[in-house]
Length: 156
Image (cartoon, rainbow, N blue to C red; front, top):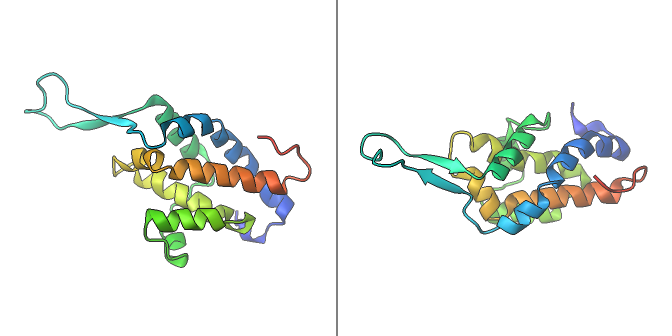
């Protein structure tokens, strides 16, 4: 469903439940901003004969699974990055700060990049927490929906 043809009320209804699920992670994201949320498991004496792999914080994994369960994950996130000339974390932050309700789909595309690409690039989920992008995205989406939610009470 393309959100570009929806009224403001329809957009709020379209995004509200998925954003609401993510807002429950705000306290955790705030408390772990700047922290490393993954460790490399090496096992006892296994590092010589096997490969290492990351072990993630359980709350981070819950956040990722909640985002993955959303129907709003955008596998074509790279087009949003290209269209908006987003090339770095600094560009992502600038875009997030300026976003309005019209860019809600693009905010989800930024989240999608971290979630989907993180499935193959192990450090991306931890980077999203450490550099605060996950927190900024969820806070901005909540702020936008709270502002435009005329029928509801603004809570999620």
